[in-house]
Length: 351
Length: 203
Image 1 (spheres, each protein chain N blue to C red):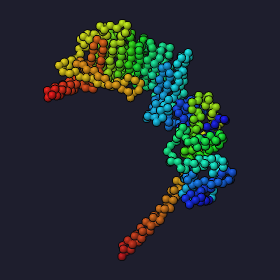
Image 2: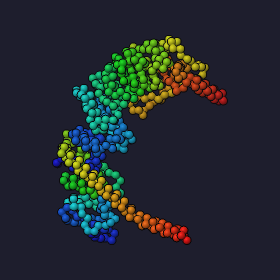
Image 3: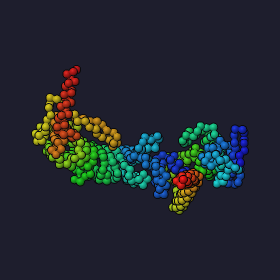
Image 4: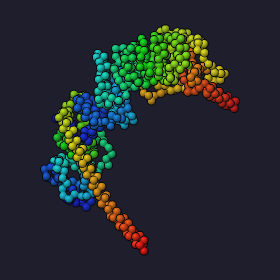
């Protein structure tokens, strides 16, 4: 059979043929030549506009999906590349280059304004690819990931909305790291090198941190700076949890000294006879921004920011620190929870 | 020229590039949107010239249309997996040249279902293949072809623009002509009233 000259067909026919192809085929065809790529771009523009973001799932297999703005009537159309060349492949290290090449080509095909979301679950030998336009990353790299590696990866996408890194970040982040400005971060570390710097530099909305060691003074300093309005303008929630090595697990070990912190900062305590105010919030836990989980924390302790009288709930136990900023002044805060308690008491009495 | 085949069915004569004519039922022809737009309302006085396509191609296209006459109304493309045995035979018995000619003729005649099936058939030829294998199925355009194609597209666009402008101009003229008697009437009435008023004033 002679090859079919696709190009000789009228525009309408070319478009009909391309429309009948799944995205996987289109993508592979676009690699054939620059001219074929241009032809595809001109014919399939409307289809590419419907792509919301490109999702890269990288583990033992690699799956790249073009996620549409609306649910696709043809699920197979979502899969851009599905391959298992990472599995049992001695050239696994090349996967980094492959991913970068795919993104470079995607730019010329879909346009350079598409968002990318990256999910990585890999062992040490895998090197994070240099990807741009990443809006959220979920990175699980065994056994550890260097702070510098993370900085290098993130520096190409300075406006990420979400970053998850586990099970352990080693070393430090750069002073000018873009991570401090990310909207939501979730980072696990053990060396007490990263969490203190986040407590100093974070400019985002939500930070969920795990560490095995942190100084009480770091917490005190953070709280004092917030009260003085020295940074943290966008901060809504910040938590620090104890991360302990299971082999060294000691039920009596403590990450914080609650009494020392309370005394140093002069936390205000609401009426302990009444139910403590509960701070509710929604947090992102995956790269998909639609997936949120509800969380809450109840505490009698709070601090007040001097310049606008805004309240932040503060809960400190030996293993957990919680900080949540209310959209209320102290006066409104006290009034609101007194009224709520009064209503609660009234209901109890009636019953 | 039309020839009545039965009391309920009208047949049309089609002329191919060779100058040969053959007849096609009105029901089959009505699957062509091009036909519907050009001839359905005004009728055809003599054979309908589809002289860009040879007889074999046109007969093949209308064979498909005749077969589909009794099928339900077309509602978007069906996948090749849904094709009937007849459909499959229809496609399989064509050689590549005929297949390409059928696509082009079907596209010109704007027979949605046939065009769609043909295009999906080409898409399926590429499915599951890697890039190198795809290149064996389809030829990549050369720079010259691209340039020539672009020139043709530009020419077509310019021609279409010209036609649209002419159509707009004609419409405008028609509108003016239609309005003229009314304007004249208004003017005449106004003149009469003015004369009447003047005559009253003089009195």
